[in-house]
Length: 380
Image 1 (cartoon, rainbow, N blue to C red):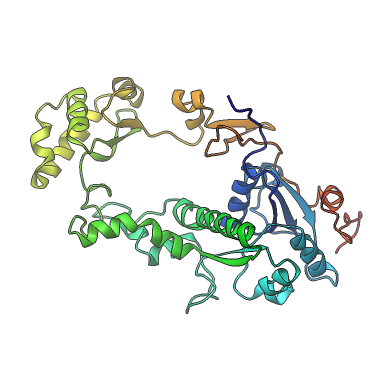
Image 2 (cartoon, rainbow, N blue to C red):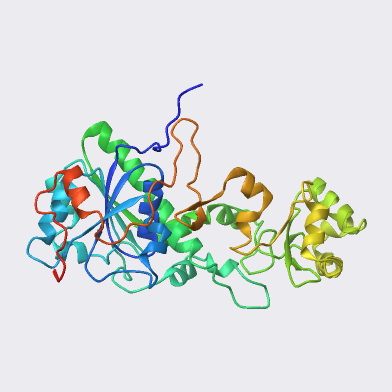
């Protein structure tokens, strides 16, 4: 068997993250989880989530330095870091990095092989490029928000998972790693423009295919995967909990109907005109038992039914516990790094980086002149 290490497959890759909030820090965390040496450039006084930095999991596995980009030496220090890095990530509005003196032109002049990743909501160009925005607005204009929620109610916001993280962070990571492959093959870096609107729209590719083929109605709650089908949705249990049902295929639905106690449900499954009748019958059955009781009925079967767990409950689910999907580090229960690698497994190596705590260490390891810890009382 091949010898394994705990450093992750990106060991040796250096990343500079210009501190921000939302998708940028999450993208940098993912790179750090996979073994990259991520140095987060924090500025005195912020930004932050309004929580103690010791609990900000998106800053785990990173090191932090404090640099005041508005000071005379600030931009030069960041460019020194960029000159030693493989990847730089920033999430400012278009033009801000340039005004601060750390834009892609200056960074690539210092390091032609640098991959310069830009994370925004609207992108670097277009009528809304300079407008403020948040996840919910980005997913709204792409059509992704419009397919959530019931037919007779408004769309609901899926936290900031769909836009910020799925359409934003993950596409930024894919982009910078692809560009890094190109840079290592050619010696030429480039700019990666990762816009949440672009990534979120890309996520709807299958839905657009179904729409074009006539297999998806352009309205909420009328389709197989948006809650329109009674065999793909959630149902309340007698104790106020919920069960999630995803019995799409005939054989899975047959098992679901058998275990639920509705042997005649199969005929209604293939007749959309009877879906409301079937939904009512399924809902009535689920209300007869508690979530725990229904979990016991369906656990380990091919009925494709699962309990809807809260964030605090999820780590204790037997399957997730057996896989180590969640881990505890520094007293904080948190999702473990993903995905998994057979030879270079990722790990949580460091707690959330406190702003500026690693300045001296990074200055030594990266050999960056002028990068010095702020002294007590220094307001730079």
